[in-house]
Every structure is written in C-alpha cells, then in structure tokens.
Image 1 (cartoon, helix red, strand yellow):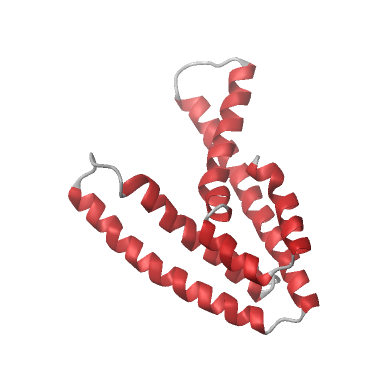
Image 2 (spheres, one colour):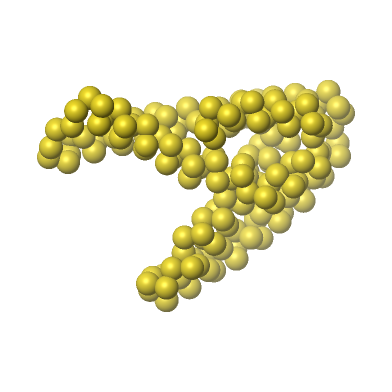
Length: 164
C-alpha cells in the first residue's frame, strides 16, 4: 500500500467509506425489527462516516488535480492492484472461514457442496468489501470525472472476474 500512489489510496479509501454508508442504508435503516438503540448507534456512526466520505472525496479530487495524464494512468494501475490485493485478502479469509465452518458445523458435506460453500462465501465477501463499493453511484460519479474512457475500461476489465 505504501508504494501505491496517493490517488489510488484515496480512491480505495473513498470507495470503502461509500460502501459503509450504502450498507447502513440497505440493511440497518429500513429494518423495522431492529432495536431502536441499535439503529440509533449506527445512525450516528453513519453520520460520522458521511463526514469521512466527504473529506475523502475532497482530498481525492485535490490530489487528482496534481497529476499529469501519465501519473493518473499509473494511479489507475495502482488502484487496480490495490483492489486485487483486497480480493487476495478476501480469498484467504473466506477460505479460512469456510475451513473453520466445515470443522465446527458437526456434519460432512459432499465435495460439490464444499465447492459451492467456498464459492458463495467468497462471492459474499467480494460483494461486501468490493462490489458494493465499486457499484455505488457516488463512487462512479467521482471516479468517472477523473479518468478517461480507456482507463474506465481497464478498471472494468480488471473488476469483471470479481464483480461477475
């Protein structure tokens, strides 16, 4: 992470902040069965994250203004590599979590079932930590103002195996 451009780190950070906001809006806010205290705690957390997202966006846009076209192109490469690194972490974590589940659940599964469980767990982790962020309209709006169509296509191609 330390070797990647500031632009790419800010892009990833903004994406994370925005998916945190989306998760609240999609799962906690509309749930009428949750404790009001629980919802209130997360509402205040959401408000704090909203401030972070605004600051991240401002800083990312500021950094974008300091880059040449070549530097921005490298920053896009760095962002792709950072997302791939996050995906690598999610792959390792989902494998470990499935292994633990399989050892603790008290039953055996067919090889096909194990393969399905592994694929579903990785898909869920990817959705939670990557897909929900890169599909967030605000993230795409900000990113889209900064990159060329060719850079957007590179990002989309790199994300295709993760998103699909």
